[in-house]
Image (tube, rainbow, N blue to C red; front, top):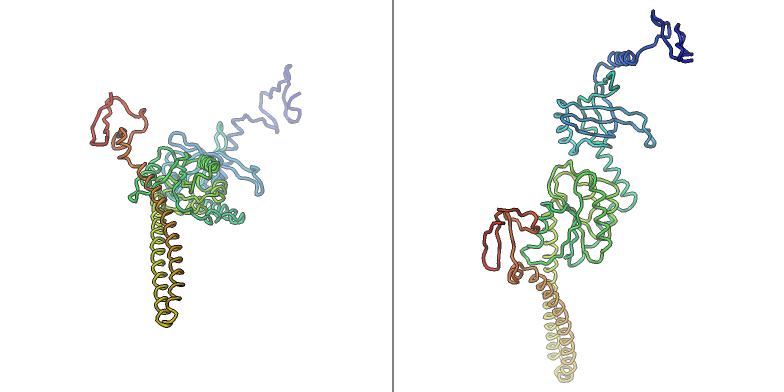
Length: 435
């Protein structure tokens, strides 16, 4: 029999379903679900009639239309067990204000995993149940939490003894083989490549792109995958450059992760970062070997290294030449002094020391010649590489460059009928239309 524990007067129908008395119910009154929900709503509205501030973690954030829907959670102090959960929403009239204010202050969008402090109105709907209507937010609280998490990552890297590991690597001489991690087709990658290969000093570089996603949730896994590809062919590269063109600072959260920082810090080649932002360094910048502001600055840094290395070679040649002249002069002066002091032994002294001088001169000439030969061979290699990369040489072989809107066309699929293009030949330039 149903309702055995309810102390009311009523009848049981033949099918076992309870039928309440026609005149009402007793002290164990039965409420409809709607009536119960109305009472819950009344209690909440009477008790929490003013907005309250709460602290919670966002477990989900979704924008639909002009509104934002979130889910708040609170975890146990030790562990990831949920001890509280509530749905919430930010209606369009508030979302249009809260969103830009939060992103401008923190440099990041609202996203899952963030700790937030929000002012909410507690609402209860008879159909949709309990929810929190967000009316305000304190971005300073979240900013402090973001900074705290970054500091925790840096502290863990320091405890592991790897935070400065990549910085301790020596840059090779020369730096010519560059592995680049960037988004394929990005303007930052194009600027870096053009600046590097078209440098005014004629320095030759070998550059290869290892594509990765440079914003959003896939930053960490794709950059780590690119690093693994480079590590598999480690002997063919001198340095790794991670670059990203300018953009919203809210896109930089992917560069502040522990796993990515550990991979960069322990990578066996020096890593140069040019993330393209003016704010505080990301964790990735802090653990890398060298941090510059933009992709173009990364190219300038590498070109500057190459120029410095050429200057060191020139300085070495000059030092050898000067040292040789000084040595010859010193030996000559010594010979003259001895000759003047001991006239009687002049012939013997002259014979002995002339042989020593000739031997020393021969050895010195051989040494200088060997050094100059090696440096000359090295310069010939650099000149050959430069000549091989000369666009004029390519034109002389019968090739031409097709440009659309001033940019070189590398893929025929981007050309369409009636597109106007410019074709550069060995001698002259012509305009053409695609048919």
